[in-house]
Length: 107
Image (tube, rainbow, N blue to C red):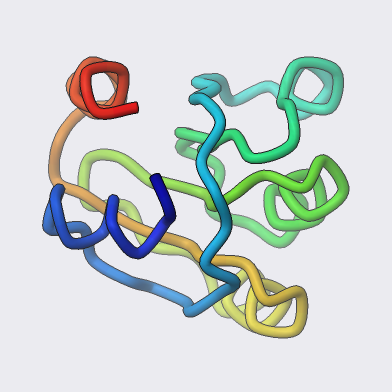
């Protein structure tokens, strides 16, 4: 499944546009050091981190996108960095747990 398919099927809000990458799995977590070691290429990263550092980690690990739960929005610096890195940042009103359960059934 590609990121654009996920957006459509889950009706996610698009905060920044990015590359339509293939989704290989899902990682949920908010601690940057763990994300650096545990995110695999193509993973969706579900996190409450809304800052520029999250975009740097996601880009470095070649995540497919960042998905923010509970209606969170990225800050200005994160938006700018995501656009320059061609990284999707998505948002949903659902909790992180709800998002991961849905994603697990889809991919």
